[in-house]
Amino acid sequence: MKAITKREHETLQAKLMQLARGAENPETCQAAEEGLAVLQQQYEAYHEMVEQLKACMVEYRELQKSLRSDILVPALREERKTAKFSVRDFQLMATK
Figure (cartoon, rainbow, N blue to C red):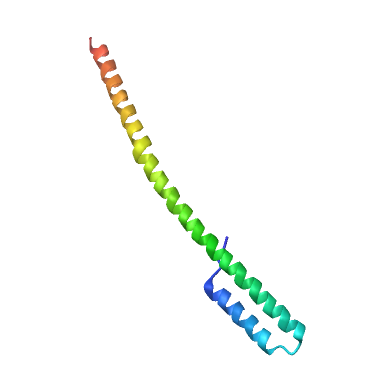
């Protein structure tokens, strides 16, 4: 997926504005004005969604960090402690 660049948007916007102002055919002027309005609405919707995606990514990273530090790391520590004692116990049994 390719991002919509501000430069591309502004270039197309300027061309449509120029066409809307300078076209001799009234239908062409109207089509350019309508296209410009739709283009602007779509661009604003795109930016709103990008901002929502950024917020979602931040929330995900915070949740990921929290789950790791609050659940995963303590559980792995417990498993490691249990495994160490089991190995030690096994070694003691083998030497007796």
